[in-house]
Image (cartoon, rainbow, N blue to C red; front, side, top):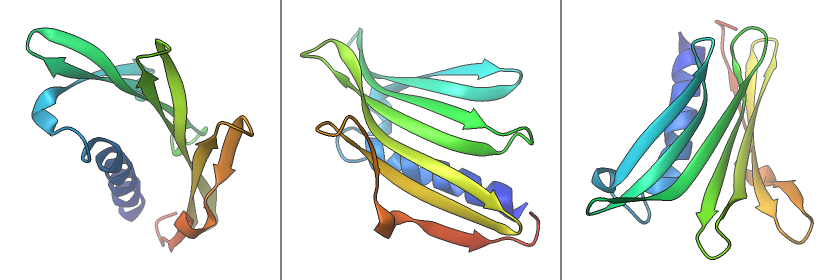
Length: 127
């Protein structure tokens, strides 16, 4: 149960960090994608009157025990008319510990770069 709470909290914190700064919840529409009962993606649209525009896109990966192993966030670039990588969080399960690693997209390097000060390890007796 503690693991589930930790994952939910991490996912909510991740989502809130991305959306809270610019738009309130009333301006956003969520469209979730599921496979085999697991949410594998979510597209978030901004509303402006009767119009919807792309805002954020999330992708999720799981291990064979249905534990989230990765969540990725992409921002919509309206100038280029495409999704751009932004943030990726990796969840590592080792014995009774869960480590959350935070990565930020680096355009110059063309890859995600670890932000070590954001790495958190939590011990959980239920793992």
